[in-house]
Length: 247
Image (tube, rainbow, N blue to C red; front, side, top):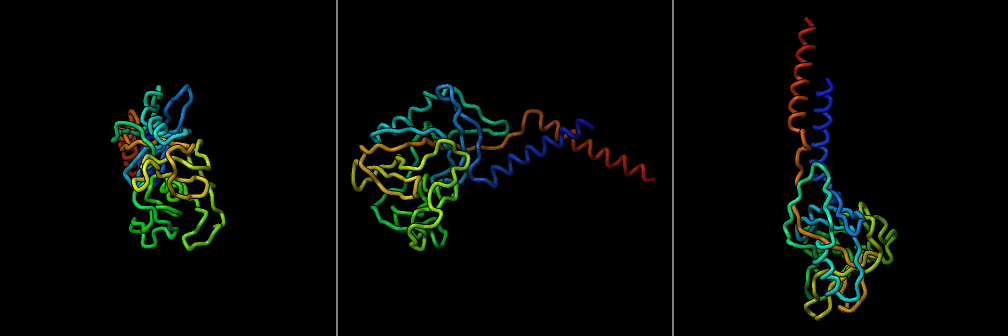
């Protein structure tokens, strides 16, 4: 009976992991240790440039290139990865980087994506979810921008009211890793305080957060396959035994 119970518990745990990856876009999958401290690794399965893992660790630099180098070299600062049981992680990018933004001429807007086709007619302003940080702020965390999609300003409830599984996300400007090619050497930036996307001089002093392309898949917890099989067979046996007792 104990084996049956263990099999059922394991089966439920494995199904829960599968359901978590299938239904939730932000999934904590473990931690990375830097300087003796553990920082959350958070999987975003539907980010606009492809699935990524967010490293919940804040950088702060006075130049965009310094922040880019910080992100690219952060693997050398990580002493260990501690993935939660039940997840297999395959990196699809060779190194960490700053979040990406769609580049183009600056066009201000706030109307969002009315027909939900993923295409925006502007590159700056509010309610843009086709950059990785905009997607995080609006789509994943469900925060509201200072300007609403109907132009209402200020929008009631605007701001970084929900940080989800992040502990080090702050209200303020963040560097992206995308240069603003129309006005070099400026870079695209995102404001986690009010949801505004814009650009700034590369010498501005802003925060940074690292991301890395990855595919995360659920795997059976050690012994799960055997326990699940024995548990199911045990349940079948118990059911048959009860049926025999009826006669």
